[in-house]
Length: 67
Image 1 (tube, helix red, strand yellow):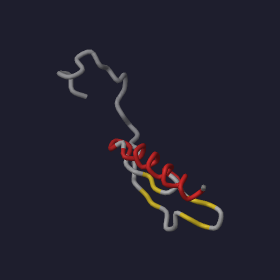
Image 2 (tube, rainbow, N blue to C red):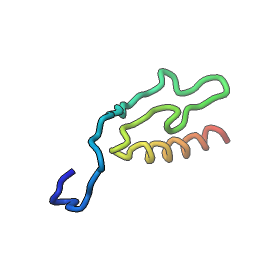
Image 3 (cartoon, one colour):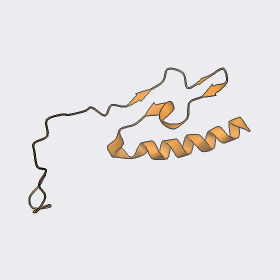
Image 4 (cartoon, rainbow, N blue to C red):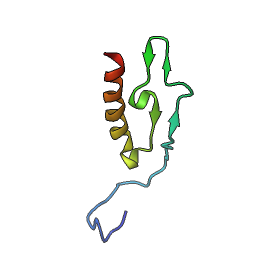
C-alpha cells in the first residue's frame, strides 16, 4: 500500500495468505431441465468486474429462453 496515496493507512499486520481468483467455465452450460446463468456458468476475475455484467447479460438472455 502506497504511503503517498494512503498516508494514514495501517493494515495492522502483514498479509500472510494469498487466495487465487481464477476464472473458470463449465464444459456444458445447459442440460436437461437446467441452464447455467452468471457465475453458475462461468466465473470471471473479480477485479475486472466483468462478472456482474456477464450475470446481468445472461439472465436477460435466459429470460427469453425460459418463457
